[in-house]
Length: 209
Image 1: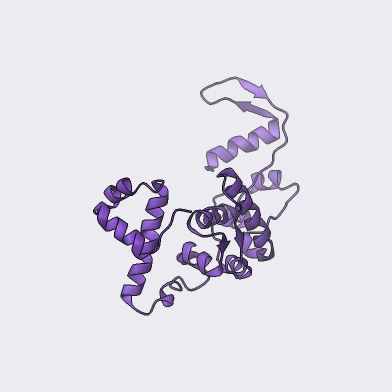
Image 2: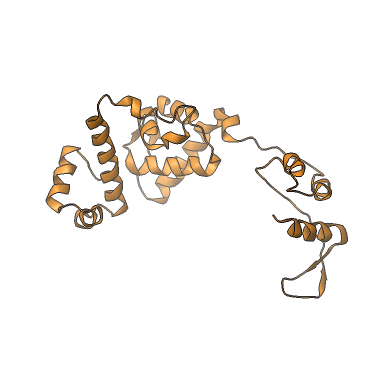
């Protein structure tokens, strides 16, 4: 929020008046304000990015909501709730996480918080079988967001060809899913012959779930 916008908010809180964008008539308001941020406002004040007077106006009751990384014990419950909702929304039998699947979710560095977790769970529902394992989580979550070692996924493969096969399998399966398993459309999109794509599907034992 710009400093000019902060000034307008402060005025609205102090005087109980606002002016519509493009208007010049003051309108009285009687509201209760709930504000949220993912930044440390005290640090932003020191940097000159946030007004101290506005901070004191807003900080009547402060509630700290910990990030996923601060409450990993809640991740299995939240992930399972997402899992059930996504399966039901797509009219498919409800899948489940294995114990090591839950542990893998807790090991991920969730810089994107709840939204990132939901996206990963949806990806797992689409690309994995009925039981989602730790290996599945490791494979389909973003390796750059897992703990301190962004190259962990690479360490699973001894040769360059093994890694290429894994990457090709994931890429082809994802494209097939995105295209509703329309082989002709997928072959055209990824620029290979349809017969070649069928060979890849057979090679990697890909099946529509």
